[in-house]
Image (cartoon, rainbow, N blue to C red; front, top):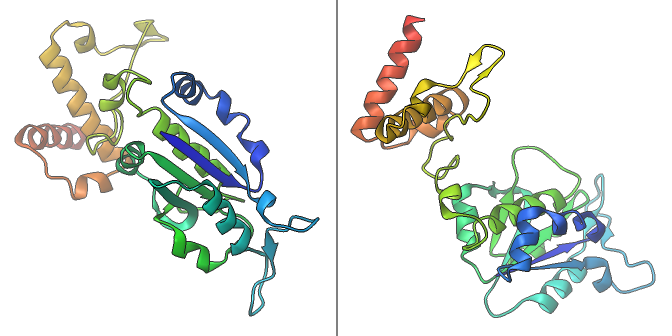
Amino acid sequence: MKITILTIVPEMFAGLKEDILVKRACEKGLLELEIIDIRDYSGGSFRHTDESPYGGGAGMVMRCEPVIRAYRDVRSENSRFIILSPAGKPYTQKKAREFASEEHLILLCGHYEGMDERITDYADDMISAGDYILSGGEIPAMMVTDSVARLLSGNIRRESTEEESFENGLLEYPQYTRPYDFEGKTVPDVLLSGNHEAVRRWRLKESLRTTLHQRPDLLEHREMNEEEKELLSQILSEEAAQ
């Protein structure tokens, strides 16, 4: 697949190209990463990409002409044009998998106080990194690129992505490695038991526990199977008894 990033600060993406998963995907031919400077499409000696807003107000607004010129220059038949903006829908793992199945993503990094609303008429999607404000969409664009690159078939082991947080609607279970005992804190013995069914059940239970504590909203609309209901009941009973 191909990811094209439209930005006014292309130098910010030098590190992204060296990200281990992104770099590996590019070297394997799984991903083509293209960074486009919107200023090259602004015209004039000052290469302005912003103007004062009509109607007055604080800050500057990203102009539609250079953005749409850049978009039209890089788009292909199967492009999907994504605007990165706090006004967008929250980015999720489900959306990352959806993006990973595309042939060509074009990511527009917003900047300034906002962007000319007419730019959104050309977009297929608007994505937010969360309920907070950044100085621009460059960091969210890196986030999207990294999350998509790791899902491309052949980049990392499929098993490594299937049991991660959010893949099954729950946060991931706790992980442990050597040493067994660190300052009196030991690894749960079930993980050393060799009993695969016991390990699976422990992991599911701890995944439910972590989700209950950190993201209870994920459980509110989850349709649980009988085993999950049983394990969650155990967790609530254990914690009530403490």
